[in-house]
Length: 633
Image 1 (tube, rainbow, N blue to C red):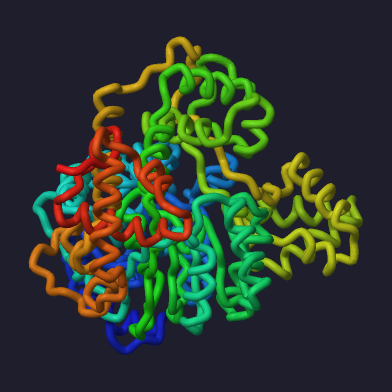
Image 2 (image 1 turned 30 degrees about the horizontal axis):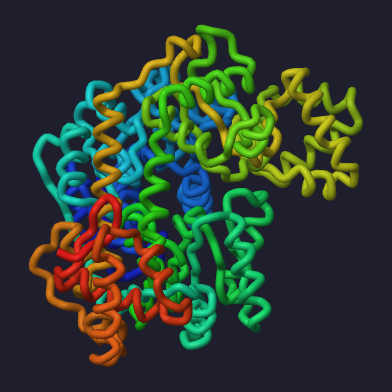
């Protein structure tokens, strides 16, 4: 018997009403209809599958690509009294087995699974035994090669149709173009097309593109003029630290964040920002996913992202509380060249691919024919140093190997230690009598972690050590010994990303890629890049440009962006404009030149004004871009 969705919402979340479209999406899931939900960042996507999961008998399977998000969701659900668990890369086979078996026995209402684990033989055998009521696919744009974050394991999700033929699919994403929307439904084999789309317009969010050479000085000015919490996105890890230190010297409470920090450092920095102890967090794009801080007043990008999907998601972390907020892109002509160069490195040649694959096999010491489904701790910096590989090209090669389905690298979410006592009461009692320290440790585990007998639970070794009044090293040794004695299963804490081999290892000379798909993805990436450049360089309502990219062709002007308000109009007097135009004509009289060479003809203090004049000449169609640079028509 189904429960009423609003009743579930009130009982577990304390809300008395749904957000726009949530009730319709939930009703569709309860009716057993496949659907795609397009809800903006912060639009409440998780409610759309968590509520129907609680309304129906059985369990909801949630496919999610990010370990950290899965863990956060599971913890949040458990805090609300909703039984949930997660299965992801890095868990040992015994942990997987116990979690799946508990799911088969009805211990959970939601089971989060990474796409790499979803179609394993172990998962398929257990899914067939579960009473599955819904399959939710989060970050569903990952299934499309048209999209900006394609992940091959997502293509295997539709195989669940044969295993669970009557279970509806609910796909969810925050950003998707028309091509991606169609692709998601096709790849997931929707019985009929059904899309719930909340408009992408953010009327409280003012978008601006400011043409700046001195970005850091402008950043300080912006952050001083906009009070409240902010996010600053930088291109590299090193730059995040530099910018944060600069802001600190200017009296702004700032800190930096990137994936290279330890999990403990990342958690501490994130918590300080969430609790307003830090005003501004300077980060790579590793920051923000799944973080729901409603009062972000300003989001600044110091570099142009590779796609408008990425920009829209990151900028959209501002103003979730509905109050006036700002999304600012600081743009210089050199950014365009940097983006084009970055795209070239993102699609490495085949020799580098084979070299990287061979190094991976040496790093993990896998034999040919072995490794399918196995996971290993992986540190990119250590890997690159050990095999004398350049970091950026190596990262690109790994990404390509992922897209070709050879391997996968999970995010660097910290996995806490976990344990499960499997011995019977009599065997455990006998073991405790024979081992004084084990007696103390197991008693602490039983008291501190209800359900640890026959259920896999997260534990804290330092807390166990404190309660047991034993050194931490002793507690770890006791746990390891108890595992060898088959008293319990124990998995130590893991801080590193996990490398998962999706196919058996082959000789590097036999490594193959699909060139047709490779070229398709490269072309799609080029198109996304061109659209991002167009957004930054075209003088049209910023909101209109973004909405049109996502298929909303007839959107009105926003009235609050830099173009609509005229904040970016030129202050160049007419006489000066004409003077600079004549000099530019002379400079370009004989040949096309790149921007940097044109600017060399002017004094450095005039470069900003000259760049404005060049921009206007381009927009008016008097200048054109060629492979060699700019030239007059």
